[in-house]
Image 1: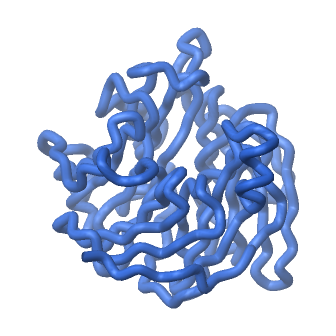
Image 2: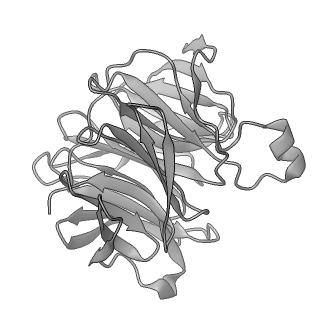
Length: 295
């Protein structure tokens, strides 16, 4: 039986985002990045002074990965772009899917090898319209097809196991992965069946112990599972539609969680008045710093 924990954290950023997603910590700049996908904006939170800036984007961005101290990679509905950290200038790095498919990027994460797994989905969440891709440099390889809402992408510390979900199916999947390339080496299998639980699997991150921290969208909580799929703990959140966690800080011992108000009407937003805010969980964790993307 999972241990139950009340919320002991705080609001990291008050702004209510329609679809807060894709958080990550940049140890070079000592700041947090995340997106409002629907708002076409990139958030930058400075840990030194607690200030948050918003950068307008010409597309729907959902994942950002550091490359070095000068550049980041951004996944979007228009492809993969390099972003100059100083100027914000964008340049196309690689195509992801043609615009004619009517899709956008969604959840993604860096494998320890420096490659990226990035999921796509239909802009109206059409069943089976998306996929999950492996990106090595400029080489984009489709590894899972007919995905509706790709989420929960993360990897074991040694890079030998990958996790993901299709939120419409609501099962957390486990797949063997080549630690040196980040490519799957066998079929995926169900690790946790979430169909009888409140809410659905959304974004995940894997800690130094191999435990999976999952944001339970519309479940108002963050769940922690071990590598065998045992439900270890549940941490209540002050918003129901939490979307994705990320470790941060010099020791990766803190955890942030994004949320959204997408799909809520005025009454729903009033009832869930912190929907869209960004939170810190408020407990010490044994996280990991995300690797850099290898060009």
